[in-house]
Amino acid sequence: MTIEKVKGFRDIFAPQSLKREKIRRILEEKAKLFGFMPVETPTMEYDEVLKGNNEGDEAVSDRFRLKDKGNRELGLRFEFTVQLARIFKEFPNIKLPWRRYQFGSVFRDEPLRPDRYREFSQFDVDILGDASIKADAECIAFAKSVLDELKIKCEIKVNNRKLLNSILEKANITKNSQQVLREIDKLDKIPQREVEQNLRKIISADSVKKIFLFLGKDLDYFVKNGFQGADEIQELEKLGKIYGFKINFSPTLMRGFSYYTGNVWEVWSKDKNASLAGGGRYDNKVGKYIGRQIPAVGISF
Image 1 (cartoon, helix red, strand yellow):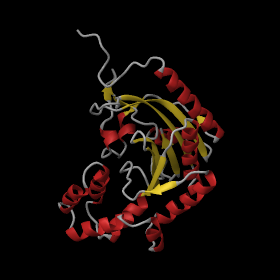
Image 2: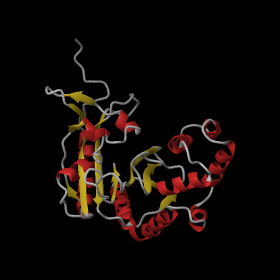
Image 3: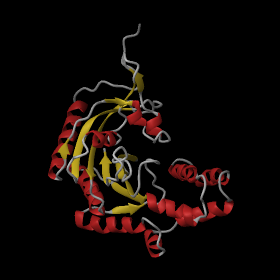
Image 4: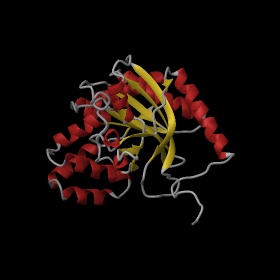
């Protein structure tokens, strides 16, 4: 028997462990300054809670699954957000708006890549029960303040899921919309020519042409022509000037396919060529077990 750690997991020693401790301390201090309060949740949930109706999402399909001695289907959390629906089912009288933050390990049974682990630390802030774009802005302002403290330069890429749906509608795409969005999401990974070829297999050549025509437009075009969601990005842009951050409109940005309902964003490091944080508005998830909509928005490091 070989005595070694499980593949995809790691031991962390000083000085890296000290750096991680410092980053966590900065995240928690900033979160409290922004009015977020700490929450802790179980590492394990019933598998039914974890999968929800989101099994099409990659993170959900990569969840760790197991059984206890009672043969119950269980799993390890792959993020914190999915647990919120269960929390509101068990504690439906939580006073809204609720501003919470959480730090801890999450787990994903995904292929191994350099600097990608099957257990990693995540830090979330969420605002539940506030439908205003101001709540979106506060989540991004929190992230910007953390990265300023760490002296990390970043770019904040923003899109809106309503806008993406509106683009598909204007391009006369009524079927296979999720498949189309998945192909568009590949634009930062493979050449545009390949994406166009893939799209022609599921929609007409005319619709492909219209999609790329729209994706080349700026935000003003979408606002002036009444595309849904464009006004929400514009409002976030205006609030950013008040909160001290600048957004860059990115019409191909997707985030989780079954989650988001409004503005979505990624905080991007040009130096590392990597995403440092991401999030958005997910108004249809938190209240699903209690039969009501609870507006929700958050960002995750």
